Image (cartoon, rainbow, N blue to C red; front, side):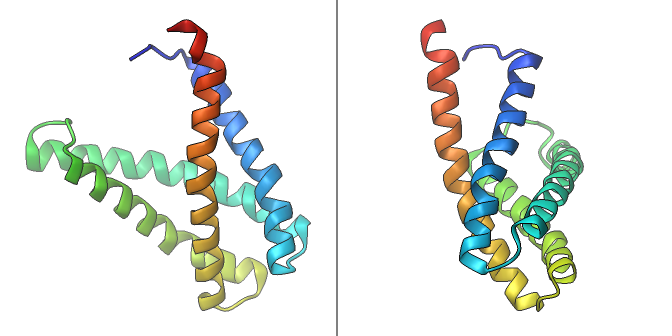
Length: 140
């Protein structure tokens, strides 16, 4: 696997977040009839919260891996648990925030969040594929 520089990682992160917001905010406003400015503010806030959760969660998960397995090498099952627990934790954090900010019920916020999760799964796959094809295809 090819080494990625700090610049590569920052370029990926900035492009990912900006690209996701450019697509998700108008699409979300259209699908939900929520004001696009409110969704943009929510998207920016949730992006920052997700980044902080990602950092803290991965730190805790890595420590748990070392404690319980004495290794940082993840099996397929470890990766599945890592992903599921990350998304579940983010769901518990984001749903009340979405409900309060948009003045909607927790149930409505839950389904809105599920919609964002589905969007980000598809967007992540497509963005990463195109990013790597564009930036790394010629480097071997």
